[in-house]
Length: 326
Image 1 (tube, helix red, strand yellow):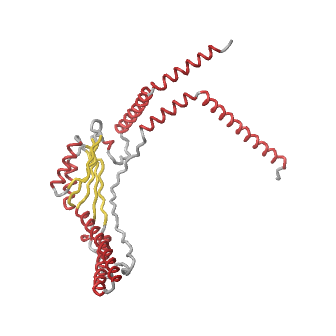
Image 2 (cartoon, rainbow, N blue to C red):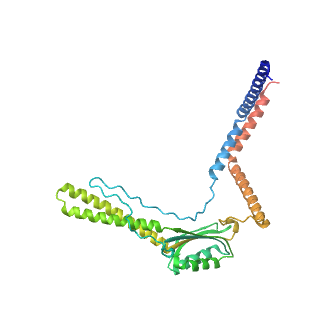
């Protein structure tokens, strides 16, 4: 059934009328807001100043994220310098691979979250244990000594003594809230470095033979420049190789210590625990009350600025009312 044309016209007019009404309402609201701001400039200014001062002194701090995955910066070989071009580096054929799992190179990292009685004492014991067993302290941080003490201690211990170290650290805790052990296979990187070193050394030997036969000054300078570049690449790869081997020999352990379980970085289970919920609610209430108290203190301190202005403004209003003729 075909709809008459006048029905379309009525609908169009009706829609336009509604849009016009909404537009007028928005304009009226905007005018009312503008008039209110004009008549209450002092209040708007004070709100703006207080808001700016509060948030400027209480920045939003993002949550810490604890990462346990190790990262390795791989050396990027620089291109050969101008002159005699060095041969392209490639993996030589016949390089032996590690087929046996016992021969593979594994770097390990571990992190534990511990609930302890004394944060400082436990941290010191962990550091002393690492030093007494051929390891060392990498990082230590102690926070909030008067509230809920929290500490982060990072040590490195010989990989051969990793199990003993983890057992000792667990023995210091009232409760182990979380524990992670991550292993990364770096065998392929180690093989690749050895292959690149072999190629670079062979290339360097070839350039040294060319240098012995060079006659012109230009050829000598060009070959010398290439030898320096090759030696820099060799030194960098040797450093990377030693770093991988040292990381495999030493395991990094990061321990989070606290007297409050809720301050530790761990993923709680999904089981309903009323005591944990109660602690979270109390902590949220105390945080809200503290924020409110801080806001009141800020407003009170700055009252020496805004209080006289408001008093003067009110007095000025009353004076103008009295001066108006009846």
